Length: 579
Image 1 (cartoon, rainbow, N blue to C red):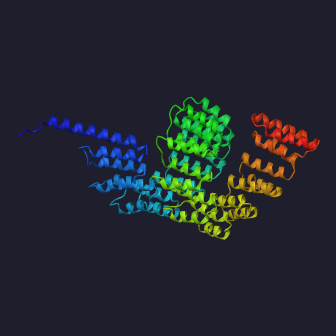
Image 2: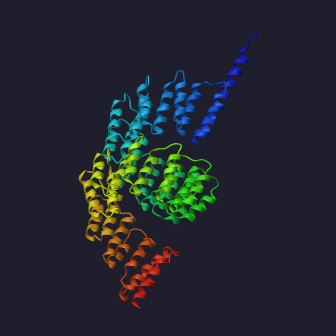
Image 3: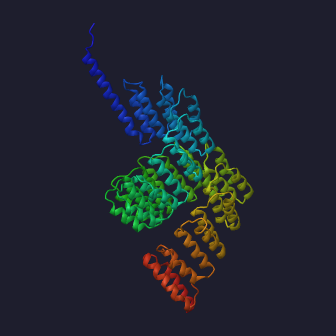
């Protein structure tokens, strides 16, 4: 009998290790693709390996399937592991949570033979994802040894749901904090619209990192504080690609595409994220020509690029072109399917939206909410409620949408009952119902909802006041409009966005207060766009003493947007009425 020498055994072990690392690298390299078909192909290659079964590879495969939505395959692999370790259990719990299968995640957690802090944090993240804050607090309090990830996760969950007081309480109770804790709390203040408090914490932070700066820039941008965002960007001691992308997005969110493009052109380096941000900026601002130019110039594209182009086409009502882009996509993810569903729904193609929903290989909560919204827009309340009842899980948007469905259908009693039973109502929930009533012409009811929110102890945000001022504008309620504007800037110390000023200008325009409207436009803390100047032309009375004002407004509008002749057309019509 010939025995192997120690050296040949070592060589064999080395070869096995190399093969193992090669297979592991193969699985890891395709995990980010989130493509179920590719995942199955990789799985088949691993199964053919002489190294299988192997717990290390099994854990990697479960992780890959979890990212691709293949939970049946992930569970089958887990059940096939003879001795799953704690890491195996944690991977499957995280995968269930990621795919919205919360009950399965919870059952697995309770079945674990022993739990580490990662398992506890996974189940904590699960409760945060379904916005069950009572359960989240109970789990946190039951944790034998919460770590910084646990504390930071609690702060982030509370802040993202609009519960600033609870987030601040957790922050104050922390036995120790890291920079993530401070950055998360800064973000909590920004999400709640308390920019001044965020600034105080930011400037008092001795060890700011680039994440701290980027968080402030993104927060200012999302709240419409473009000047503050730009000042921070200019003051940064160092910047990364996220900094550039954040300030670019801040300008695009305020429809300042020329400045966004200037920043994009000035970027020292551009990665795919930057290209996608510029593409999304054109898409969100309904600039199909600009979006197409960026898309065609991209050195490479990913699923985000293709989806952004689809959105750009859908926003222009080019549903057939959007469908063609969808069909041409090299790969699709759930976001792409959701975008196609929304494209059909928003353009009135309900049957096509339903077909897309039925064809989806994997649905998330956005998909379900999209279908509820599609039925809501068509006032098909029975179908909306049936879809809502079928949802595997719901979030605030789900409840907001179904309440809106009944409100739009004139069933205000049922809408109110649904709203009253909604778990975890926040400012967004109140804004949603208020906006629904305002858009359907029930202005007084919209205002009642707003004041009900104040009575419930929730603070309104900038969106709340956009809804109120817009309602006042359409109803011609000048005094109420001014009172809301004063309430916003006085008691709640919110800095007005351009939209707030535009609403007030429109109120003044509708009640014939042209001189006051012109004064407000002239004193805005930012450059008014052509839409505002055009609205002033529209309100001019065809009398010679007011036409000079109209001439100047039309000139200002044309200087900002030379290609838009509408203000001059209005002016010509007015002169025609005089002569």
